[in-house]
Length: 258
Image (tube, rainbow, N blue to C red; front, side, top):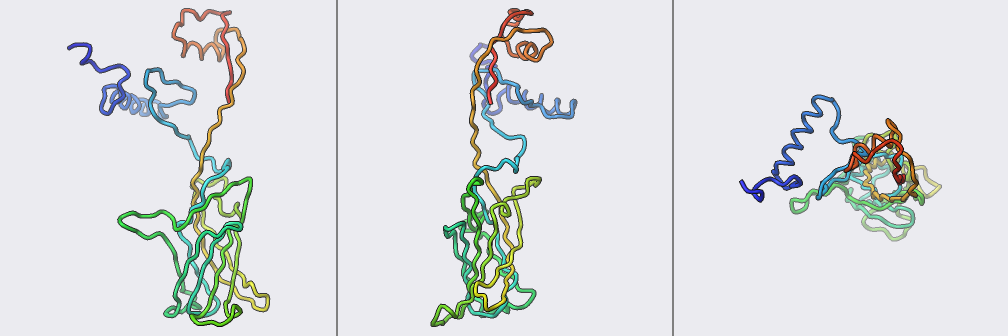
């Protein structure tokens, strides 16, 4: 067999000898040591580095900004019977979306009443949310939910019954100790007109997707002597290409990057 036919030591193409060997090694490692194969701080040595970038966990407490998705919203209680409704969603002063519904054939004042908006399947594509909008934690705003109830024919704006409720950004985001990025909230919409005492109940499900940015802050290099059995000594032993040059008293230039 010629050298051109031999599997290259850095060949990571699909079904290559290197990838198959790596897969077997990781399985055997996990079985024997009862822990994952990869370790933070370990480096890959080769001409072509494997393409992967991941996070060990999703630290909800360190959210900076991203998108809030609403997979579903349900209207559970309506105080009065009307023919039509509009449900308006705004984040801060910006309108997000409006839902409309006919109520002429529904008994909305019954305790069993429920009206749900959720994604629909369009052309074999299943959407994951009915609406999404960006958020920034350093500039929090409120999600405003406004319900309008009215008959098909009305002459004056006073004929419209308006109820409104608000959710703070911290209520939309999952708790810091949450294992998932989803949150379900129950809120009540109060009557805007003070001469009436009306309430509607709404359940809002939210999900977040994070926009992650990594910033590397380079540290200054300083000269440091190598001492046997020190952390720097161990690091140099594992990464140096010329280990024979590593002698006690030798110097290395070290920088800590953040």
